[in-house]
Image (cartoon, rainbow, N blue to C red):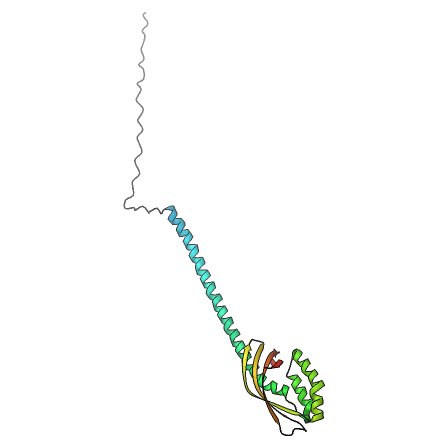
Length: 205
């Protein structure tokens, strides 16, 4: 018996599918791209903003400091003007006390004179009273009365004022019963001592 050979057909190869490109994404419509600022412009803005703030702060501080300075000057000027007025008034009162005395009340008058002075001038006046004025007033019955005819301020500070006084002195004694009138000018330094204006220097000019 003849043996038959069977032929098996080869499988048919199909071509691989070709990949397709993905569909492009839809482009949004009506979108306006934002303008891109140059780098130099952005840096300029960054510099300008803090600089403006610093300048404003400096101007505010400067204005405040100027106001304080002006206020301080005004206050000091007011204090000096008050010192000028008070010292001139005190000089008109105290200088006649310092330069006047009566033979009958010499101790009381000289004590009042010392109380109107201060500093080194007080010590000098006390010494002059002890060595010259009291002995002469007691021995010769000398009396002197001093009045102020005019006065003005030479210079003024908050605690010291220099004034110029025009004075008249009437002096009498047991040898000269008719009072002798003498005119003089004296330069007087007034010192503020705990709120009281006292004579700290007196010089004829």
